[in-house]
Image (cartoon, rainbow, N blue to C red; front, side):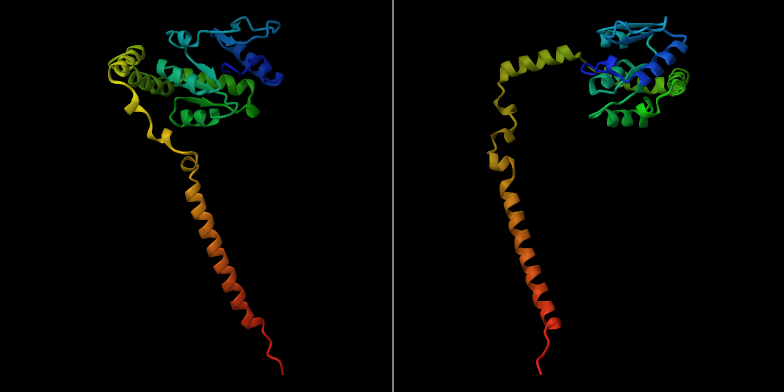
Length: 217
C-alpha cells in the first residue's frame, strides 16, 4: 500500500477479506505488513519492507496488488506485471481508472471488497491473457531505449559540466511576484467587471423607472 500507507491500519473487515482471499489461492503471496502479531495464512509471507523493483522484475510474479501510487504503477508497467488496484487517496483513483481503461489490470473499491471479488479478480487477471499481453507490450516499449537511465543521467551531468546550465534555466523563474500571480490581468478583469456591472445596474434602474412612474392628476 505504498511507502506511507501502513497496511496494518487497514480496517479489520477489509484486512480479513484480503487474507481470507489469499488463503484460497494456490499461489504464494508476499505482503508488506508490519503487524507481527497477525495470524497469516500458510501461503502468505509478510515483511516490514520489500525490494519492490526486484520483486516485480522476477519472472514468477503474476499479479501486483497495489494502491496505484505513481511509482508503484510505473514500476509494475515497466516490468510487465498486471495490476489489481485498491486506490486510497490523492491521485490513486485517477491512476487506477486510467489503468483499468487501458486493460492493464482491474480496480476494486474498498467499500465493495469481499473475498469473492478479490479471488475472482485475481483469477481473471491471471487467466485472461489480455491483461498480461497489454502490460508486456507497455513494458517492451518502455525498455526499448538506446541507453539505461543511469547512462542518460551521467550524459546530462557531463553535458551541463561542459556547456553550462544558464540557458537551460526556465525563463518563468525570473518573473516578479505580480507577474507570477497575474495581478495585472486580475486587475483588468476586476475593473471591467465593475464597469460592466455598473452599466447594467444603471440601465436596469432607468429602464424600470418609466414603468414605475405614475403620472399625477
